[in-house]
Length: 87
Image 1 (spheres, rainbow, N blue to C red):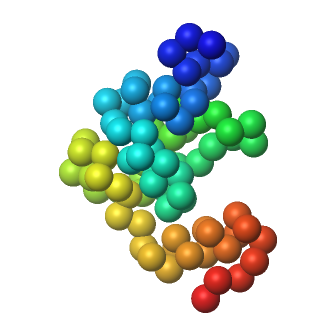
Image 2 (tube, rainbow, N blue to C red):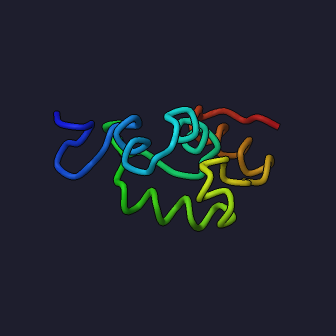
């Protein structure tokens, strides 16, 4: 695997590297449901770019400072991912 790429899809670190972001910024974006991963854990960079742009302010996108996602949405996303309910 060269530079974190597999058939056009990227690892978390590969996506971070390709966008000039810290891996921790990308991990936080995934955790907060700003961007999503495929079932195999890889990131579709085109889809992730669209998701990040739709879920963040332009300043946050350029700085990699997070998505600005509503905390209620973040909790709902966490609940959905774990199959439980978090109020």
